[in-house]
Structures are given as structure tokens and as C-alpha cells.
Length: 186
Image (cartoon, rainbow, N blue to C red):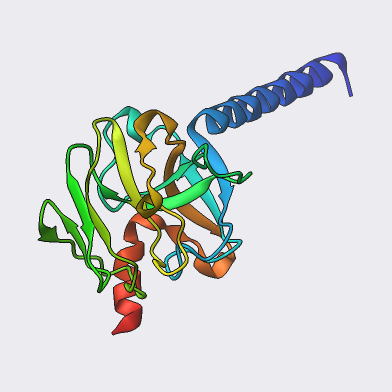
């Protein structure tokens, strides 16, 4: 090899490394990785399922009812791993859970096709404070969620669970998951 070829090769290699570093840097800012710990989101998410979390989705819009979010555990609980739950109540709304498990938002029943085990203990009507969200797991029987007296502050939301990446048989975008679950049941 002559000097020109070596320089060309080194320049090309430097370009590849630079592009790789930019991609890694962007992904660290925009995405995080989360592992489902437990069955509180069953059947939507399975124990040990791997997810990519979109950390920038809420920079351009507010969290919506039905979004699956990742957030640190409430201070009163000594858990190491982040929680993964579904937003049920939005700021300023009232939330009530009846004895049959039906959730009422502002006195109207909430349609939740993703919940297979709706039976849950009843919760008297509460009002979601501004800047806070009421969250519940899809497996209401085992979920530690807002029914136990905590809300999730907007500032504490890590991001929206966005893409299931493992196991490979469960590879899909989570936004289409409720449709897939309904189709599985029929």
C-alpha cells in the first residue's frame, strides 16, 4: 500500500467511527432500554420482555390516556427498577374504580380492551392534580399502581414504552398492541 491509500483508508475509518459515535449519542438522548419486571402489565407486556423507551415523545406533546410509560418507583416504595404502567387518568380528571373493576373517568366508564383481568378492589373517586397522572397496570389483580395512593408527576416520566425488542416473537411497536390483543381474543 502506498501512503495515499493508507491516508484514504484512515480517513474512511475515521468517518465510520464518527458516524457511529453520532448514532450512539443520539440514541442515548432519545431512547432508553427497559426490562419488564413482573406481571403487572400482563397480557400486554410479559415478565422480562425488553423494551425501547422513547425519551423525546413528550417533548413535542403531552402524555395521553392509554400510553404505557416508564417512571421511577414512588419514594415510599423501595424498588430498584423503574415502573411500567398505563396512563388512565389525566391532570384535572376524576378517577374511580368500581367493585367490578370498571374504571370511571369524570363519571364515565372507560373502555379498556387491553385489560383481561379487570377485577380489582374498588377505589373511591380521586382527583388527579395538575401536572400528575393516574396510572394502572393492565393486570389489575397484582399491579402496584395509583390505586395505592400515588400519582406520577409529569417531570418524573422517563418516556413512553415504544418498541418491544425481545423476545423476537414479541417484536412490535407498542402503539399497535391493543389492536393485536383484540385480534388475538376473537
